Length: 570
Image (cartoon, rainbow, N blue to C red; front, side, top):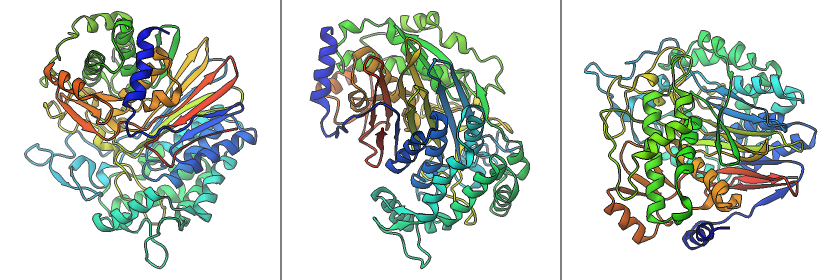
C-alpha cells in the first residue's frame, strides 16, 4: 500500500467525527442491503427459498413500498442493473413518463414564468413539483414485472405476497415514520397525507404501534394476481384515472395502458483493472460516473493526499465538468437519438476535459451554456447478491419525500412528483440552477432525466462491488466517491460509505460538503482557490456489497444515515 493510501485511511479515521460506523455484515449465501431492515429480511427469505437475485429484488422492492413510503413505491419509478454470475450485464429502465396531455410549457404562467406555491410538505416549491400535474406515469410495477418475466425463477405471486402480509398484518411504526406522521399532521393541507398515518378512530399512529395498510394490501393483491395488468389495467387503473380527473391530474387510462418498461444495454467503463456497469439514459448516472472515473484515472493520485485541499478541489473540478456535459447532452434516448454517449464515456474525451483543470484555481461555471436537473432527495436504493453470484443494484424514487403527497384513499399508495425533473422553462438556464436545455424539455410520453446511479463493478469478469444511493442531486457524486474509495484506496465497504463526501453540480457553482468531515484549514484554502462552500449534515445514504472472491465471502454495509436500514445476509 503506497503512502497516500495509508494517509487516506488515517484521514478517514481522523475526520469521521460524529459519523456512526455500522459494522459490516458477512455472509456466504446471499446478502440484501436496503433502507429498511424489514425489507432486507423479506429479500433474504426469498433467497433462502431458492429465489435468485431478481426474485429477491422484486420482493424487497414491494416490501419497501410498504415499510419505506418516503421513497419505496409502486407510484414512482427507477432503474435496475443486473449482472449474472458470469458477468453478463443488463438494465431495466422503469423511469416514469410524461402523460400524453403534457406540454413543454404546462407549468408556466401567462408571462412564461415558473410560479411558486406551497407543496405537500408545507414548504415553498415551484409549480412543477406541486399537485397531480406533477405526477409522471408510474413505472415501478412494470419494471419489476419485466425483470421477473425475463430473469426471475420463483412464481410472481410468491414475491408480492410478503408485501401484502406486511400491509395487512402491519408492522411496528419506526421512529422516522412516527415523526413524519406528526409533521404532516401539523404542516400539510393535503388530506390524503394528513390521514396517511391515522388509525380507524382518527388518531395518529404512534411510535411502536402497529401500522396496517389495508387499501395498499388490496392494490398489491391485484398486482399479485394479475401481474403487470393488475396495475396498468382493471380496477386499479380505473381508480387512478378517476382520481386524476377529479383532482386536476392529466394521467388517463390510456397513459397507463401504454406504459412499458424497457431493457437497455448498460453503460460500461473501466478503471484500471475493473469494469464498471451502470444505467444509461434516461439516467445520467452511468455516463457521468464513467466520465468522472476516466478523469480521476488521469490524475496522479499517488502525489495527492486523500481529503487534502488539492484532493477536494480535484474532485470538485471533475464533478463540474461531468455535470455540465450531462446538462448539455442527456435526456430520454427515445427522444434524443444522437446523444454522444460513446464520446462522453471515452478515454480520449476525458483527456481533453482533464487538460483544462487548474489544480490551484477553481474553474468558472458559465450559466449561459449548460446545467443540471435532479431527482428529489427521497430516493431509495438497495444492493443484493444471491448464492450463485448474481447481483442486482436497484434505485427507485417518488422524487420528493412522499412524492406529490397525493393518492387515492381507495388504493393506499402515494403518487410521485417526477414531472419536476424535466427542464420547466425551455431555453432558460440561470446561475441559480434553473436549466432549459433541449434534451430534457417536457414532451408527451417522454421519460424525465434522472440522477440515479445503480452500479455494479466487476473484477476478473465477476461481480465485485454492488453500490447505489438516494440523495437527489448528490447521487452521482456519492456513488462516484464510494466507488473510487473502494477501487483506488482499498477501503472496506463500510469505511468507503462513511468517508468524507462532497458534491459539485456545476450550477449553482458551489461545493456542498459534510460539515464535520473537512478541516478548517481545508475549507479556508478551498475558499482562497475560488470555491464557495455550503455545509450539509449528510450526503447520500449508500447501500453496498463487496464480494471477496478469494474467501468466497459477501461483505455488506448500510449507511449510518439510515438507522432503520440493514445489511442482512445468510
